[in-house]
Amino acid sequence: MANIAIEEIAAVLAEGQVVAGLDLGTKTIGVAVSDQRLSLASPRPVIRRTKFTADAEALLGLLKKENAGAIVLGLPLNMDGTEGPRAQATRAFARNLAQKTAIPITFWDERLSTVAAERSLLERDVSRAKRADRIDSAAAAFILQGVLDRIYSAGM
Image (cartoon, rainbow, N blue to C red; front, top):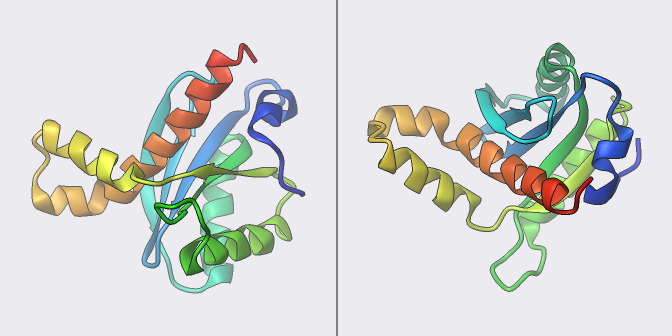
């Protein structure tokens, strides 16, 4: 399916569907899902990346299990707002994923999301080893929570 705007998310969801947030890394895909009220993002276990087809199958299986009706993909912009190689790779991933699913995809500026997620884990006194396993899903939850807060503030 084609990309959608953030403002269209609530309208495309069927009854009981949630929104998934993704933080696309080179080694893992961080995943978070919203509640049905679109108010709270919760991290899920990361997906270890191998090849695109296997990654997409694992991701789409999880999204089906979670009843996701929309995907928010963190877009790693440069600090000056331009798109570099990582943002281009993220857009390519989204294009390829869109060929395998009807779930609409939108993007969210993820600058500093990993930093915020790391701080949150540090504040909760999560050990270094556990932080490494949780950071990408925590970043995905941070990305998704930003979208949910925007949807809520817009009164959608």
